[in-house]
Length: 251
Image (cartoon, helix red, strand yellow):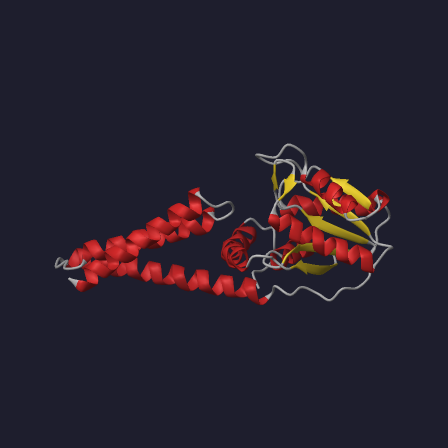
């Protein structure tokens, strides 16, 4: 049957693409997993064509309904993330918290470079500002993200005296908690937070929960495919953060 053949082809394409995303590309595992699930759904549809038993028809209907809900949810949450990518306008702030984003050994990832470029431009525009570069050492990293960020900013002409390293954080929430402690120890001041455009909305929600009133500065993601990939992941991350109580509301 044409319909069955179509579903088999769609399933095979999804499995191939998911394999590439999961095993051949860095940073696409979550999206690859979603594509794999979609492939499994198409395979199920192909195998279920022609089912006559009422009980199996009911099961197929439930599976299709759940898949539709999942697709609608994923699309909606991705839309929310992508609609909030612009961030705020630049205004002078005392401190700029730059959120870490992974290293390849000692080399900043492309995502982190995007954030550091945004920070460099901001600090050149507002020479009284101080950067707090936040990030510990994760898997596959040989130095802390904070140290790598400091090195990058210095290489771009930013004075070391304008850079404070926060080297304990292992996630965004800890980035904000530990950076806030540093600012409080220095008697406070106005705060800006720099993160990737796809991440800026959740970062802002997390900052609100920590009592940080901040200007949110979005670093534009260089590769459009990265922006879409991480926007999909961010939708699920928002839900996770809400369930864990790290943010007060989704929207």
